Length: 97
Image 1 (spheres, rainbow, N blue to C red):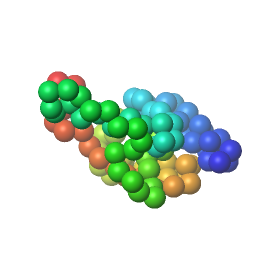
Image 2: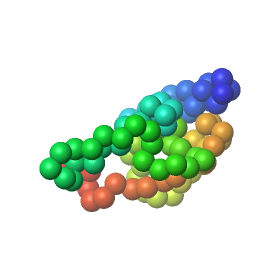
Image 3: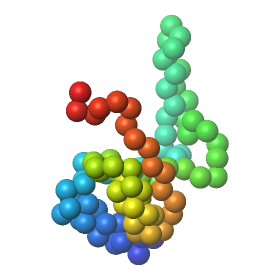
Image 4: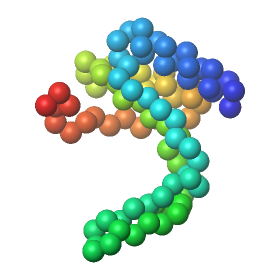
């Protein structure tokens, strides 16, 4: 894990230096999650993750890339850095609005 943390730190610096960085953060373990359902008259709070699964999101990056090709190339670098898979999704609409 120390290697992945060091590599991710270097990748984060690269994102910042090259102007792609918007925000990033690591997440605590799924066991620290609380699921909130506020659809009824009273909210319902449940300890633990929303889904029971073998894989969980460990963190995320929000980047500003000029196009999908750049975003995918950066995701490939991110995957190598954190030593895991990376999912890429665009924001809906124009985030500047």
